[in-house]
Image (cartoon, rainbow, N blue to C red):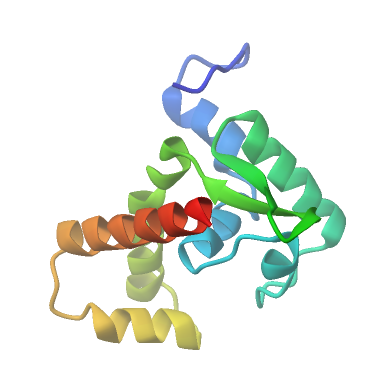
Length: 146
């Protein structure tokens, strides 16, 4: 469980949004599921997050135990970030936002999202979420072992 000291509201939605509700945090969580692990990986995302904001959000995610990091065994100057179980548990929210956007926003869909929709066209929500989470956990475990 994530420890919070929220004096503003006793509503779980309000408190959750204080942690993950800014315009960058869920994009970073999404990028973990797309294979990002280093600061440089996150900087390469098409949304072009500023370095100071990226640094701030990574610190915030660590503060709330949504991510952790280890030092790259080959280069101790490079941090390799990964999601904790609490961070992984945000995937259903990421998935639902992706589907909501497809169904409700009049916009050009990017290649990554478009490929995701095609790959999962006739699959059930629960299966997609389960498979995505399991794939991330396998990736995380293999990179933490090395």
